[in-house]
Amino acid sequence: MVKELKAEVKKLNFYYGSVQALKEINLPIERRKVSALIGPSGCGKTTFLRCFNRMHDLYPHNRYEGEITLYPDNINIISPEIDPIEIRMQISMVFQKPNPFPKSIYENVAYGLRVRGIRKRAVLDEKVEKSLRGAALWDEVKDRLNHLAFDLSGGQQQRLCIARALATDPRILLFDEPTSALDPTATSKIEELIIQLKDEVTIIIVTHNMQQAARVSDYTAFMYLGEIVEYDKTDRIFTAPSNRLTEEYITGRFG
Amino acid sequence: MEDIKKRIRTIKFWNSVFWITGLLSTLVGLALLFTLLTDLFMDGFPRLSYKFFTSFPSRFPDEAGILSAWVGSFLVLFVTASSAIPLGVAAGIYLEEYAGKNWLTDIIEINIANLAGVPSIVYGLLALGLFVYFFKFGESILTGGLALALLILPMVIMATREAIRAIPNSIREASYALGATKWQTVQSHIIPYSTGGILTGIIIGLSRAIGETAPIITVGALTFIAFLPSSPFSSEFPFVSFKWLFDPFTVMPIQMFNWVSRPQHEFQLNAAAAGLVLMAMTLLMNGLAIYIRYRFRRKIKW
Image 1 (cartoon, each protein chain N blue to C red):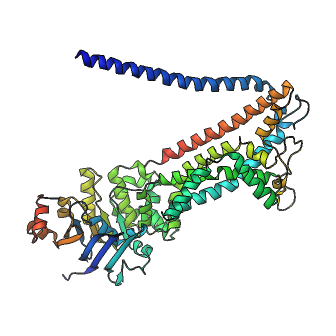
Image 2 (tube, rainbow over the protein chains, first blue to last red):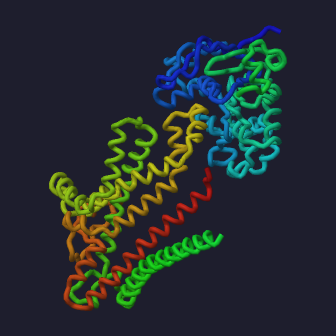
Image 3 (cartoon, helix red, strand yellow):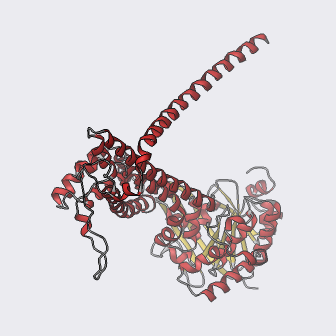
């Protein structure tokens, strides 16, 4: 099968004020695959992930250099000429801690659609159901869509956040350590879900849990001090890494 | 071993000393308040009747009532609320969500905090110069209401900012990540989730405004008024009239002040009765604030 790229990062540099957090990053993102970013705390993996939906634009003194090209339209995600809202409409994100809105389950999922001006009840109903099914939550909540999202357990809340991110038919779905606040059962449910979702959407996941990267991802990039040390198929990274630093990290000798 | 036991005894002794001091201090405050309330109640309660609420002030203490005073207080508070709430909430939202964090916003922030501590009579002077002489609103309900609005504006702004700050950043990021604009985020998240805190601040501000006397006297409210402002409703189109805004007025604390300063004892009783009504209004408003806070807190837990 010919490899198909969904996005390509070229010579990306990122600065928080005068501090350079990402250095000369080059990385292909394969379409409908799971790409994992691993590395020790503070290596820049979350910073890198947040470039894809321009989250850094929310805060002052942040600066991008280089290119993240989104295919097939060839637009540069981080170009200052492109409105970050246009990017966020196409690239969704699931955060580290479940962060549902203090609204009903239904309204949480529908919010992204409402932002896009969709008002028709029938359309919203259909999308909400489809997204909740996609996030493997529908059967648990179908009888209480009007209940507050806070009534759900932590794992359910995170799946609700996934449903919310799916409702807008994103082209790339970003996960920022999505299971770090969850127990093992909830974690394995989310992992199964991620594997299922890659049939429909390209996924990039940041994780500090190497087993998780090994379980869910097709490709893995190991980051250290703001640089990508090694990028390869996940089974290669975990069985025969070519870089000594990668090997030390995955065998638990540092990090 | 004996040493440690002795030391523990000394520490425990000082512990009980502070316990007793603290308790006594609390009791002093409570006892004073209780005495004050009982005294007010004993004097004022027998005067409270339907007639007391529906009569104008009079030179005969038995016939005097607080009609013009409570209507005046109500209308002034209405003007205060409808000007201070939109201005204060909008300013609070702007400062928290829109304004950048730089030295200018720092200065604004410090100044707003200082404004909340300015003596109320100073606001009265400002209102006298600005609304009475410059804008020529006269010694009217509009002037009185705006003077009190100036007074509580810093409180409303600060309450709004506090309420907005309590919203975790992860909620904002969730909204922006879905492609929402700043206004969409403010409209569907920031405002709804901070409403409880904002309302609480507003009501506490208004309950302070209702008891204020100094700024109202400064802008020239009358102390003896035997008529009502013109009605806000009219029989002809458009059925509402704003003529009352420019009518002279009095408010509850001024009516009390007027009665207290008279020599006859009966008027003192009237003052106590008006004081009771004013206290009841304030308590009611504070109670409402607590209830609203409870209602909204129950729904939102971060």
